[in-house]
Amino acid sequence: MALEHGMDVKTLSATIGHVSSATTIDIYSHITDNMQRQAAVNIDRKIGGTDAEMPRFEKPVRKDDNPTPFEPYKPKIRKSGTGCVTMLNDHLFEGRFSPRNAYGKREAHNIYAKTREECEEKLAKMIVEVKARIKADKERLKAEGESLTEGFTMGGM
Image (cartoon, rainbow, N blue to C red; front, side, top):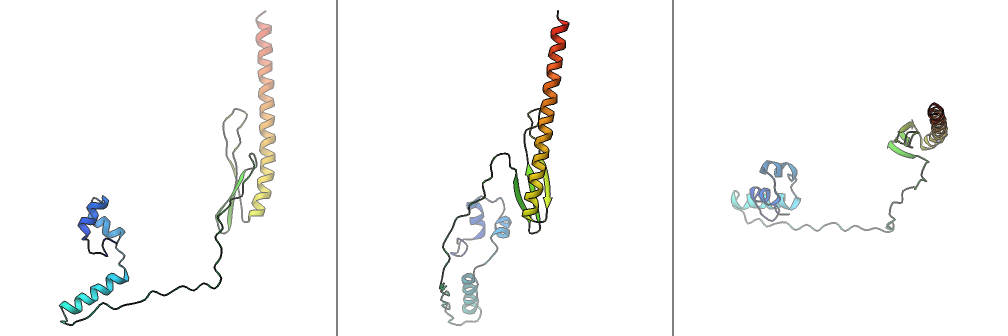
């Protein structure tokens, strides 16, 4: 808008904090229709010696016979421990499950599928397998911890 109202590029560049006016020109190089028309009229007046006037164009009025009501996006809320499904592009979905392992650290497990439904099925199977493995690891660690404790108390007598 500043350019449209006659501010020079160097001043605008300094005002918005660009190091170089080239940066400003690269970013804001689009020229409005009004600026193009004004430049054409100025050329006609100064070079052509005419009394050209700025043409008046009315903006087209949009006529919506049945506008759609605004509805905010409501994402699907998943319960903790059920993973998440993300659409990576129009033909690829990613299922992700990131539980804490037996040692208390997060570990990420991903699966990929071509449809959301297929991804949901694969994710459900993967979650069952991962939870079973974590449970087995916790039981193994508990058993190892108990055997170490028994060995320590017996050796200390």
